[in-house]
Image (tube, rainbow over all chains, first blue to last red; front, side, top):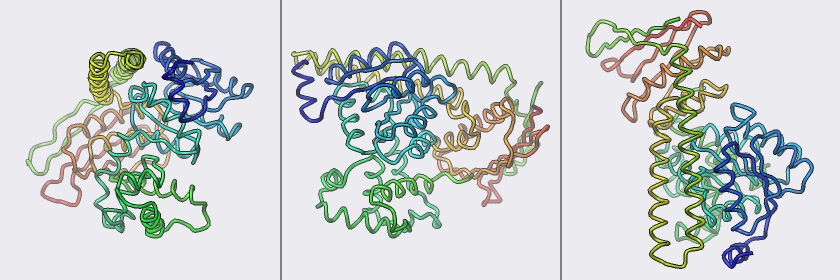
Length: 236
Length: 181
């Protein structure tokens, strides 16, 4: 293992990763990046069915899937749902060339934890990829920051939107939650204490009318989903 | 089979004019073109970004490291540009099964406030593609913040009505289209 990989793995543990990506050149690049980050690539295939076969028979920590791959049209999403149903402990990182709310919603419908959705060219770096995998393995939802920012930068102007009840600070907290940040990370970003963040989050949950019988983690996801559904696009 | 769209502009007080609905061949061509941009150009550049990062992490020269960083940032901007072109040619979500989601995605990127009134049944795949392209092409011409209502009806003869700023009578515009599947 290279000194650079050792430094990276020092922050997290080496993982067993399986890849499904139909672009051979990018697939090879991903393998090299993962190896440079000190992770073990246990399978590298070009379609969702083959990946499902690997995950079914091999010990895998995280599966990386291209959204648009065979089986067409969105084989990555269908395969991710199959893997989550069969092996709920396997982390899922969905990659795409497009940052689409539709894909994000589909990803969050597949799972409320250990899942990520990122742009290919943005995640194509050793440090970024290693950080993304660490966060997924830790149970977080990792959303492409470009998408999270775009969604929250222009909050709904509709007065009947649930977001209309939130203060600017609560919207800031919700935006950072949508980016998959932990309470500690949000506190650091906003220069406030973790307790203040928790207070804002509790207020967001109350104002959005999220049920009390959900676990804290699911309420976070529901809050983000509420935001996405109440964003500036209307219709069914 | 050809399709057409009539354009009404109450504000300008003009007679309706015809818009051409994409033919089946043109829809297929645009789909293939977007796929090529995605599979060959964008993915190739993303692979280059990965390779550049690998070179950067092994580079001991800080100047070289910085230059590679600049190059990667430039590459990401080019990918952004390719992405925008690809979305204009053929909205990626339109390739899937969810017609409404595809139009919402276009509106999302254009910062439009979209109200969709779609039939409760699914349109045939080819009709979905043609109608989707007609509507998305029009959405791409609107200014950010525009409120736009899209109504789709009909099975054998599909009627499309697009109304901009439906709450404002003076700036109302109606767009009508029809596509026989």
